[in-house]
Image 1 (tube, rainbow, N blue to C red):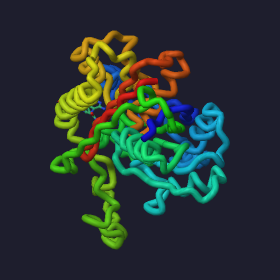
Image 2: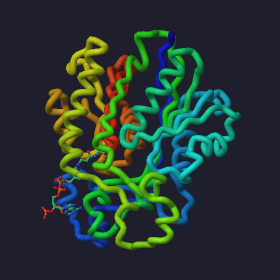
Image 3: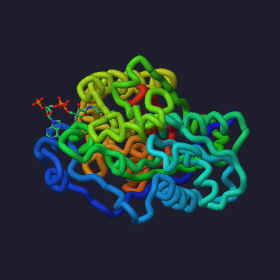
Length: 336
Ligand code: UT7
């Protein structure tokens, strides 16, 4: 059995910065509310027609990760792509990355686990490397939220939170079992599936023919819905649980954590976790202020920025943790 380790990271965000004041021009919201409740100051939105999609952003992040890993695209044995905002209903973006990067005909898998998507994707890639089946795996988290949000006052509880962007990692074989990804921990609770969801279009409740027949501008099922307070309450509990689970599995304590990179759902959630585990500001990486919540892209963007800022060093204990729609949640324990 091998371990896997992250040997290259990259991220890409669109140039277009949307501030809280920009949003207050199109809906009844304000900078003070958004900052106080979420910590977000601005986010990036793809400008319609400028060519960026979930896939192209993922490809841009992937190119940087591949270069930093010091490998060739043809060394990649498998692709895992996590997103809730694919370019097409099907096929998923994994195959589009294989095409756009000109990678040989390796397997490409799409992961549908929203905010936990990158943690799930890393876990999948880690298993393939552990068994020796693959040596180098490209893992991408990318989201284009802005084209699907309700940018009116009706949607303000959700639309001020989400932003666009992508992050990517190259996972590679590590022969030293004390290094790299030590363990991953995944959970779900489908009982709360609709508490944070986008119901239509879907083959379950909204058939395409219904949508065309309806053409109802008041139908909110085409927009993301979030029961914010309920999600918040579950998030703080599950984040804590799954971090503890990962630490205990490896006989570690919270004082062993060098860097926690939580999914960027809400600065208040990160601060709650920081306090609970008695971590310093330097031990928790947050960038939600700049990008909002980019769901599956948030951890790889944050991890890339932390690495670029020299906050991830050889031998560090790095913990990734996520919670979101599904509900799904998970953690990754890494000895860098
Ligand atoms: O990433 C996946 C996981 N996601 C999360 O973990 C997110 C968890 N939830 C949250 O972060 C928070 O619940 C939110 C930031 C989404 C909302 O904060 P909140 O403190 O729970 O606010 P609320 O939904 O209870 O709304 C409070 C008030 C309401 O007005 P009334 O009923 O008190 O008059 C809302 O209508 O704030 C109003 N409101 C807004 N006001 C200005 C809701 N959205 C906005 C807005 N601007 N954008």
